[in-house]
Amino acid sequence: MLYFKACPKCLGDMHLTEDMYGAYKECMQCGLIQDIEAPKIVQVPVRKASKAA
Image (cartoon, rainbow, N blue to C red):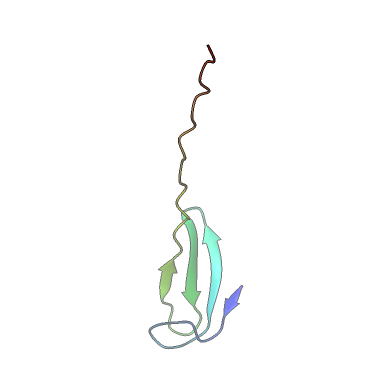
């Protein structure tokens, strides 16, 4: 995927790519690399069913 004029350093075009360490965006003009953080998974505690008397 391409991001036009998304580089914070030179306002160049960036493309999204992935390697064995994870996803990142790389500028095609200046070579700046930005890591893409994986979304954090929120675990919700499950309530145990109460026993009826």
